[in-house]
Length: 296
Image 1: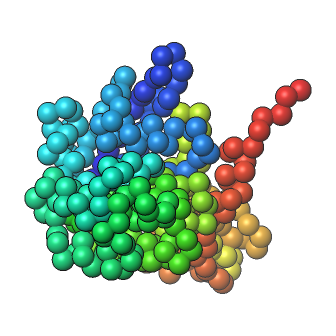
Image 2: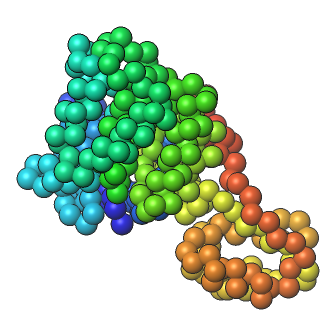
């Protein structure tokens, strides 16, 4: 795994920022980090990146524990897009990118130039003269230009117009296919559904992810020709199943994880009348998790 966070805790005085936050990010996957403003998304990311010192918990990047000694070396392998794009306001964009080049041994000049063309960045403008969207583009370019194996992005599409968002999504999917692991915070549910393989929900500093979302953003719906006991289904799919829900006509919904070819082989051995792969209803779960509590 590329990133492992275990029981990460950060307090602001007596107030909980995050508490016992745990998750992993593997290569070739995009993991969405979802929650309303103030839920703890940025605190989690800033703590992982070393901008905040945790009160408890461990962070491992590429299997190595993150601490003040190891962090500078590990950061070279991470691409980071912060929630707020604060650079030297009076510096020209080209100088900002040259500065970042000095930080990374693997900075790829050709790829940086390619990204600047794709995003149509005015390299000779001062940073303070850029629109919010162009400032975000600069942040994205500096995160990608050294071709990291892990991307950590805090609301990366804030300020981007729909056309640029589409371009950005394409780049992220290409990064994923090349083996990069991506941890992406967002409050835009359509974005998460479009991009992410898994999703993590955070609320008031605590992870509240429903079990079915811990494994995949998809579900397999199998309608069986003949009645099968739930015990029989559970035994056949033991390594894949987190939740089974009965549906009409002897069907079951199977939330899956693991080797897809093995899962396919098991399903094909069932006597089924219909099978489909469907998206999980992210918006419904979001509303249920974050709706205001009703006071008696």
